[in-house]
Length: 182
Image (cartoon, rainbow, N blue to C red):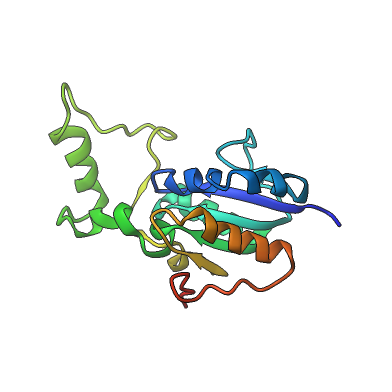
């Protein structure tokens, strides 16, 4: 049997979900011969590949690059998982939506000018700071999500249950504390 082509993606979040993935400890050793890690912050791939079987997407959708990446991922991936509370609900990343700062320009003004330690200026050169969206969104507001893995971060045993079920060709049952949304 061919190995499962696995990707992990980090959007607007803190990397806690990826750290929880690494907390799989010995299961990672069991997992290694069964998967090919084709894209992740922990590998050197620059372009999201075609033909991905499973992706775990950490973080909320915060900027134009995230929107483009989410659509590319959906086109190229069989199973998409919203990985952690930021991807599922927006969570901490979406707090800027509620801060009364209004639009994205006000957020940049606050971060780069008002809170600057020295001479502040908003980086405007293309490729330095991606264009912020007016509002941070959970992943399902941008693309279809197949499974939701809540938690901040999701515990390793929950990740193991989901990945293990998919490797076994089973439909994961996320119920009780492992709620399946939508």
